[in-house]
Image (tube, rainbow, N blue to C red; front, side):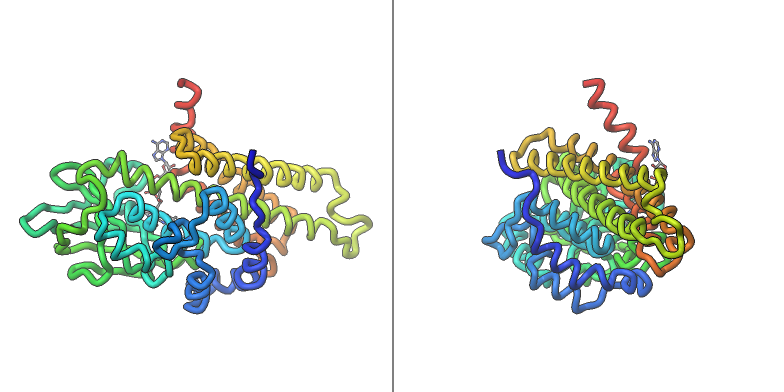
Length: 370
Ligand SMILES: Cc1cc2nc3c(=O)[nH]c(=O)nc-3n(C[C@H](O)[C@H](O)[C@H](O)COP(=O)(O)OP(=O)(O)OC[C@H]3O[C@@H](n4cnc5c(N)ncnc54)[C@H](O)[C@@H]3O)c2cc1C
C-alpha cells in the first residue's frame, strides 16, 4: 500500500520562506503581490493538477492535496486562488474540446491565464439549481446575462468558468475577461481570505461564440459542476488541514512560554486539552483528505462522499482549533501580533465555501441511509 503521507519537504520549505512570513501583510493589503503570482508559475503550482504534456506538474491528487495543505498552512488566500484556478484547469482538461484544451491548458498550466469559478449569485449560493444567469442561444452562439458574486480571484482572472441557464438546462461556459459587456468590480472588506482578490462580475448582453460551451449543454449539474466542486471541496479540505497544523504549531509554541508565570501555560490541564484536540484533529483530517485523494487517483466514485466527509470534518475542526488558538493566546491572539486571528477568520470562511457546514450536514446523512 502506498505511503498515505507524501513527502512535503519541498512544498513546506517554499511556504516557510516565501509565503507564511508575508501572509499577514497580504491580509492587510487585501491583495497578493504580482511577484508572488509569477513565482507560483515558476514553481509549477498553477498547473499542479494538469498533465505534463500540456506543461502541468502532473501531480496525483494525494500529492496535490499535500501541496494545498502546505499552502493553506501558510496563507489561505494563496490556497484559495490555487483552488479556483485548479478547478477551472481541471474542467478544461476533463470536459474541454480539442480546441479548448489546446487554447487554454498551456496558459493555465503556466499561470499566464488565471481562472475563476463563477457560480454564486446575489440571490444565494447554496442551491445551484436556482441560478438566474441566462445564456440565450442564437445562430452564432449565446448571449450571457446575469450577475455573479463573491468570485475568488475575480480581480485577476483572464478565464471565467461561468454557470448559466440555457433552454436546455444548466450549462458551463468559458468566458474571456475582455468579452464585451463583462464588468468586474473588486470586492474588499471580507472577514477572511482577505487577499484572495474577490470580485463581483456582471454580464450584460455578453456575446459568446459557439466554442464557449464547456461540456454537454444542459447537463452541467451532473458533469462539470459536480466535478469541479469536488476538486474545489477537496482542495479546501486540505487547506483546512493546513490551518489546523498552523494553529497547533502556533499554540504549542505559545504554550511553551513561561514569561512571568509560575509555570508555562502548557502545564495547565485545560490548555493541554486544547492541544490534544488539535493534535488529534489534524491527524484525523489529514487521513480523511488522503483517503479522498487516493479514491480520486483510483477513479473511484466513492471519492465524492469521502470528500464531503473530509471537508466537513476538516473545516469544522479548523474553526474549533482556530478559536482555541486565539483563546490560548489571550489578548495577543486578538491582535495582529499573532497570525492566529487570521487563522480564526479564514477558518470561518471555510465553513461557508464549497458546501457550507449545514449543507454538508444534510448531505452526509445520505451515507447512513445508504
Ligand atoms: C471568501 C469567499 C470566497 C468565495 N468564492 C467563490 C467563488 O470563487 N465562486 C463562487 O461561485 N462562489 C464563491 N463564494 C460564494 C460561496 O460559494 C457561497 O457563499 C456559498 O455557496 C453559500 O452561499 P450563500 O453565501 O449565498 O449563502 P446561502 O446559500 O444564502 O446560505 C446562507 C446560510 O443558510 C444555510 N443554508 C442554506 N441552505 C440550507 C439548507 N438547505 N439547510 C440548512 N441550511 C441552509 C447555509 O449553510 C448558510 O449558513 C465565496 C464566498 C466567500 C465567503
